[in-house]
Structures are given as structure tokens and as C-alpha cells.
Length: 272
Image 1: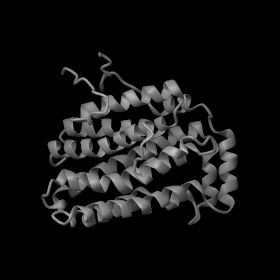
Image 2: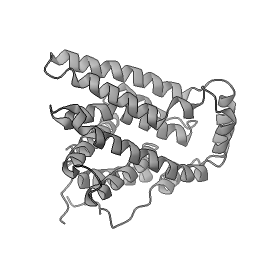
Image 3: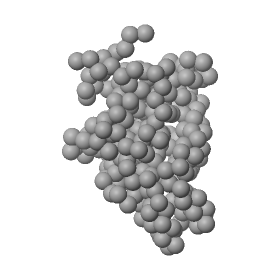
């Protein structure tokens, strides 16, 4: 299949283009030691897995799943572009991207911040847009499928995180309500994102400001959650400091540990 040429700044039109753009972003992050590549590498795994599911007819409606995935991914890719162009992305992504400039932030925190912004804010918006004024419930299975895939890959990635962050298991010593692992969970994020999607869907047909206000209110809440992931309280702060001492410090090395590129997926088109 011939590859579509990627035009800088143009939203991806297909899931293949999403994968291409993610691979370009990952390559750039490796070259520049940019920690934005941590979440990009995780997200690449998710998107490739969704693509495989579509090809294997694992979903109720493959075309609809691709539409949802592309809308969802474009929100992330656009946020990265905004941040790199010194424009303001959503507050949720601003918190995640600002953290990439801090050497003291754990790899796990970077991944949680990315998931926080993308699931808790972006997924609900993408679901409503993908439903395209149809009953939102029609897309519920696709919505849940993306969350299931993401959740399953988290366990896979945890093995890789434990390699780059050898003392991460110390988090288990402080599994309290203050733990950043408990503040954020895939299940809670999924349920909250669906509730947000239902709320946002109710704004269709109403004045535009109600749609915008609904998104802005949600973004403010999710931004605060993201910032709280960066500032745990109590003994866990000491634990995190110890974990950081032994964590890999070279971003490119960490990204390579997460990103196992295989040519069978997509080859980045670098032609002018």
C-alpha cells in the first residue's frame, strides 16, 4: 500500500498516518533527548494494537473504530505541535508537557500525566465527535475497547518501566490513598471520561459557548489532577526521590526501551 505523504501541521486522515506521525515524533524525541517521547512511545503501542484489531475484525465496526482512533490521536498530536510552537495547548496537556522539562519527574509520572490528559479530557471529546450527532451510546463499545487495549498495554509497559526504574516497586510500600498510582487508574479514568462525554454530548445543538465552557471546565479539573500527580504528599515523596536516584537519566535511552520499532507496521515517509 503506498504511503500517504505527511504534511506538517495537517491532521492525520487514517490510522496509518497516525502511526507515521507518531514514529516521526518518537524519532525526533530520541534525537533531541525530549521526554515527550515517553508517552509518544506508549501511545504508538496502543495505536498499532488498535490497527491490528481493525485488520483482524476484532471490533463491532472497524471503520468507526478507525474514525474514533484518528480523532482521538489528532488531539494529542495537535497538542504536541501547539506546545512546540509555544502556543497554549489545553491545560491538561500543558501540565504534562511542562513536566517534561523537569529532570526530577519520574518516568511513571510522565506516562500517567499523558494518560490523564488524553483519557480524562481528549477521549470524551473524541467520542462525541466520532459519534457525529448519532446516539452517543452507539460508540460505547469502541470507547471501552480503546480503554481495554490501553489498560492491557500498561501491564506490558510496566515491565519495561521496572527496567528503566529499578526501584519502582517501592511504590508498593506506600499503597495509600495518597499514592499517585491510586490517584489515577484506567478504570476511574474510563468511567469519568464517559460521564464527561455524556455531558458534552448534551451540549450539541445548544449555543457554542455551552460546548466550549463544558470542555474548559473539564480541562481545569483534569489539569489540577495532573498537577497533583506531580506533588504527592507524605512518605511517598521520599520514596520517589530514592526511586529517581536509580532511574535511567538519558531520555533517548528510556524512549528506546519503550519503543520497539518493527518494519512490518509502517515505514516513515521522509520524501519532500
